[in-house]
Structures are given as C-alpha cells and as structure tokens.
Image (cartoon, rainbow, N blue to C red; front, side, top):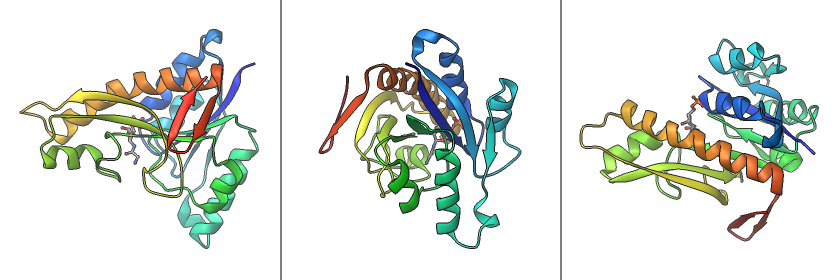
Length: 201
Ligand code: GAR
C-alpha cells in the first residue's frame, strides 16, 4: 500500500522536491497526492505543477479570521485523504481545527535541533548563540511552536565563517536527507507515539 502524502509549503520547496524525487520510486512507499500553500507564486507550487501534482492556495488574508483560514485549510487537506501531512517549510502555525482533524499524522521539519531554537529563525538563533553543532528536527505537530514529539534529527557543524545563509544551506542538505529517510520509513512501517517518544515500525 502506498501512503498518501499532502505537503504544505511557503517558499522554495526544496524539501518538497526531495520528497517528489523519492516518491518517483515505487519502492519508497509514498506518493505526494497534493501540495498546499499559504501564498501563491512560489517555487514550491511550481515544483508540484511541473510533475502534475494538484495544488491549492489558502491565504490567511482572504479569510475573516485566522480560525476560518485554519478550518478551511483542514478541509482542503482532508479532501485528499492523506495518511501523512508533511509541513515542509510551511511558515504558518496550524490551529485547533486543523489538529482536531489531522493531529497525530502531521509532521513538520524545523532547521534546528529541538528543543533548542524554536520559531522562525532557527539558523540565525543558533549562530547568534554560538553553538558548534546544529541541525534539523522532524517532529509530530502539536499546538506549540516546534514542541511536538521528535521523529528524527540530523546534526551539522557550525563553521567559524558561517553566515545565516551558509549555515541554513548546510542544514537544508542534511534536512532533506533526514526528511526523505524518515517519511519513507513512516510510510512503509508506520509509527507509534508513546508520551514524548516516537517509534517507527
Ligand atoms: C527549511 O529549512 C525548513 O526547515 C524551514 O524552512 C526551510 C524551507 O526550505 N522551515 C521553518 O523554518 C519552519 N518554521 P524549502 O522551502 O527549500 O523546503
């Protein structure tokens, strides 16, 4: 059985591309059935369109309230009957309607080693703090900011001459490999969450 993935993006979509490339091999065990975004005109949507994957865009500003946007997003995702929802560079927090509908099978990738440096500026905050290693974390989304149970992590060094951009690019290379590996194993083997711990298979 092939797991159905809905991927949500806000930007360049290189993590999405890594998943699309992996899904081209039937042995990977997953297919991207739709890609959603909170804004139009982004490379992430173009990547999906180029390979014929359906897309949808829901902008917060087009809704009367944040809650209405969140409920509409939950509905749009549900229409594709996903086994797993992957937030891959999705720069919005999903809310209670979304998590009521999809909670437990939503994962997000964050460019830092949780629980350090949650939020929108993981690479910059790590560089500012002066850590010598950082990385990326795949986690099961909960109502907090990057607080959910950890599925996988990958470590990269911080170099003396790093800028935020060079560090984030190094993180993203490792992040894509981690994401493809973990999502594939989750799709093929399933996963169990017990307290804070996630076990694949
Ligand atoms: C990734 O590094 C991802 O972890 C980060 O945005 C980048 C998206 O890259 N996400 C967040 O910071 C979420 N708070 P991509 O669009 O090339 O996949």
